[in-house]
Length: 132
Image (cartoon, rainbow, N blue to C red; front, side, top):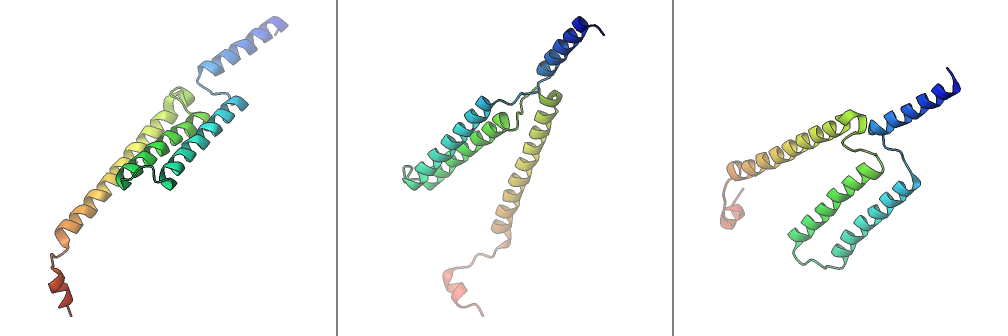
């Protein structure tokens, strides 16, 4: 192989690896991810500790939203996942995992709700005091 063809082969290999969706880690990317992670941790901490949101349900929803965004930041900046990495298989595996988690959680909550509603006897406070 001549020097010219060797250089062309190396250049073509570099282009193919970047087109294949392989993310290259950089210090700038890691610092950006770290700063976003710190911000996405500090804001919910401040919201809860400062009692900025009075309604506990709303506060929980806001914290969960920040957690979801932080998961995405970790996947993009630290795990280098995108739609092109590993030919899209990483994203497909992530979607499959999320579907299974949603089905499992929703099914568990549904079963627990119906067991509570249908299996527990309805007793008044007076009836409970007279139990053996």
